Image 1 (cartoon, one colour):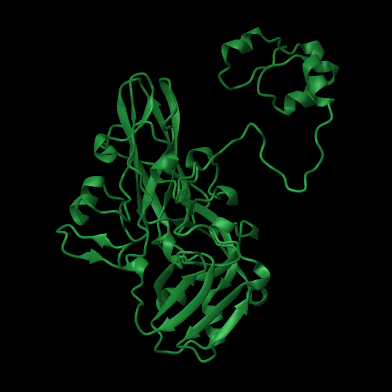
Image 2 (tube, rainbow, N blue to C red):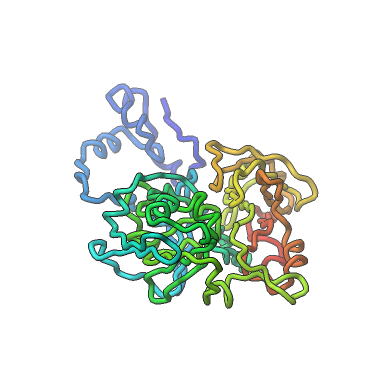
Length: 412
């Protein structure tokens, strides 16, 4: 009897001895159930299972065979979207974007000042924040500059890896604002970080009283230092820089504060170049195919196209996939759970006949917003737009099966 795996074996596999019926009956069924990667003999299997492995670690780590990397630059590191499963990003693979480096903050000395148009200006310690009723939600976070137009040899994480998804835990900002007695004429608040850049953003009170949070945990553990430890602001569905990390001060006022990061940066030009879209907080609907993608080489036959979609406006209601360069579109299947302001997986079965083509996806959210083409974005905002770039992106497939990033219009 021969035990064979379902994956495509390499030529060396044909030289390895297969498991016989006698060897199987000798007591190696459990080894087969454990799913070794290639056919092995009973002697090899028994020797492997009888060798004592390591004991428990104080903190476990990934297998040496699993090596996802964020490939950091001087200011950011991108989530390896093509290497992950499901929708929750491991905390240590969550993207990072810094303006002044990562501060080292002793949680015992951490303080958050809330003042301005409030009845009771208050300084909260981290322990104080933990005393409030906690809440947990799953949502994505995305940098508003999340687009890299690169060479054909570009991984999905380099195209738009400045987005990640976390289970966040903390206290609703509205709870804290009730505690300090936010005054009725307060229309905006200033969120200030404790990093060297003193990152500051103005946030309208409507958002603060809706779903904004002060979070101190991600995926069940304390925040990672690069994502705001010991506490940060979280504005679900809004551009990442407004969710100020290492939060140390909140000031309430009647007007926006017009800080450096919302005047000289994080504004969008209009098509005629004469004005800017300021306070364009919401991240619009977007999607990307993560497999097959560069550096995959595929063979003619059936393939499942897989990817991620998300929208800061709420639920993703549909994703369409084109396998002929956008001439025709087909509805993809959304993989549960489908949550508001959250990444959702999609998939579409595709039979490739071996001809050169281009595959792409576009998302639609519950407001009816449809992910635009790059040409439509440039027409609306001009050729120099830098933020909120969410165009339909594609992968070309050569007649040799090589997957390469996008068309020339996105690589320029």
